[in-house]
Structures are given as structure tokens and as C-alpha cells.
Amino acid sequence: MPKVSALDMEDVPKGKLPEHLELQRTRVVCKGDAPIHTEGIQYSGAYASMGVDNSLRMDNFCKNFKIEIKRLTEDEMEFDMIGIDASIANAFRRILIAEVPTMAIEKVFMVDNTSVIADEVLAHRLGLIPLDADPRQFEYLSENDVPNERNTIVYELKLSCKKGSPRLTVKSDQLKWLPDGSQLHKETPSQSAEPKTYTSFSGNQLEVSKKPLGVTYKDIILAKLGAGQAIELEAHAVKGIGKDHAKWSPVATAWYRMLPEVVFLKEVTGADAEELVKKCPVNVFDIEDLGNVTIESTGALPPEVLFTEAVKILEEKCNRLITELS
Image (cartoon, rainbow, N blue to C red; front, top):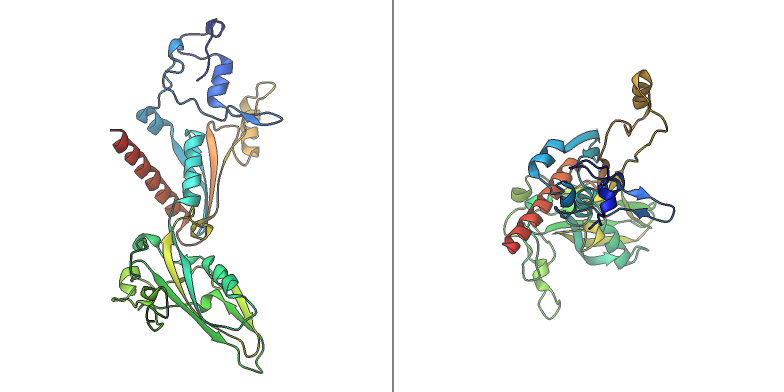
């Protein structure tokens, strides 16, 4: 909480803050060694002695908050958030990276692998492939659950390079979705520690997904097979979040940057001011309290949907906190 002295009150109208306190409240200042004033003043009565209400009022927030979309493509979105505290904008960034769920390959069952790629390396590569599957249509798989069409997606990879043939490149689009579940034969408990993993689905997964479930990018190289080499495996994908493992993070990039404040040594007006605004591509001369956000999706969901899901997660957290406090 900022300290307010009697000197701060001299020659300052009621309801206004001294210049240095207003700077501390509204600006992050970049010094030579580190930035200062990075933490916002959250206490509503911090400036009560000066007649300044520092509380966050919903009507004021709704009036001042704006989102201006600068660029929107299938995989990327760039927009400005105006009139929002940097801490809230950063919360969206962290939620996008770590808490918006996606589907990713979690278990790989090797039937045969005679390629030069080790089993664990191949399994790791499979886990990082973005899947074209909407996680909102699936449930989380807990330790006590049996895999079914609502919590697990099963893929098969089965390729071989015949003797005398040229080298074969194995790519991500050769993963085949199995809508009826695992095709591996059930093993007895004495042969496998996890026989339930091989359970076939009781229903067809197409009824859940409403569309075939493939991969987002079809040209990711997984391995190369020489003559006489083969790969046969089954991969099981489940729902998860990025804070458990990076492979579940739905974004390749999600970052927030604050645009700098430019202080002029002399006043610029009229035609000169208009020309200056036109010359700046990011409009730092005519927008205040602006933060630029860039979201680059890995392909599971469009970037605008990812941001909407992040807002829902933050809203759910706020409602849970209010419930616990009451």
C-alpha cells in the first residue's frame, strides 16, 4: 500500500493524486536494472484520504474495457485489450498455456519397432503431435476409469518397408483413427499389468465426435524405415492440461505485451499530430492502457475459441473463490 504524506496533499485538488502516485498507480517504469511499479494497487481504500476511489467497479470496467482484433487467421489471433489491468491480462495468458484442455497421445503400445528410432523416443514424438479433436466433446480419464469412446481416442500406426525398397518416410498422417477402440487382443492379468487398457469401446466413437478424428498437421516426420524395417503400434490419446505436461498445451505462443508510453518534449498538434498517428503501425500515440495479446494455436481449437475457453476458466475460478469465501 502506498504511503501518503502531508507533502503529497499540497496543491493537489480533492479527488486527484499527486503526479508521482498517479505514475505509480497507472504505469510500469523500466529502469536500467529492473522494472518498477509492476504490482497494481488493489486495495480500494489506498487513496481514500485524498478522495480517490481505487475500487474496481463493474460499471466502470464495462464502460472502459474494449477488445480490438488486429489479425485473425485459422491458427493465429492478435488483438488489443484496452482498459484492463495487466495482472488480469497475464492471467489469461497463463490459463491459455496451462489450463485450457486438449487431447494428446498419452500411452503407446509397441507391437513391433525395428526402426532406428528407440521406442521411448518414438512415443515422445507421437505425444507432441497436435490432434484434430475437440476436447470439449470428451471427458477426463481418471486412474479408476475404463477407456471408452468418451475419454480415449485410439490410433494405429502400422507400416513396413519391404526388402529391396527405397527408404520409407513415416509421417503423422499415417496414424489411423480406430473409432471402435483398441484392436489389440486382451491379455490376462498374468501377462499384463494393465489389461483394462486394451478394452474395446462399447459404442462407435464417431457418434461422440461427429467427425473423423485425425491429426492437425499431416506432414510431421516421425521416423524413416530402411529395407526390412517395420513399425506397428497403437496410441491412446486422452484429455489433459498443459500444467501436467507441455504436450497438452493448446498454444504454441500466448503472450501479452504492454505498449510503451511516449513522452513528447513539446506539444504536437493539428496536421502534425495526425501525420504522427498515421506513421505508427501499432497506434501507441492515440491509445492508452493498451496491451497487445497474440495467441498461436497448435490446431486443436481456433485461437478465438481458445480465448473464450480461457475466459470461462477464469470465471469458474472466481465463482469458486466467492463460494468458498461465503
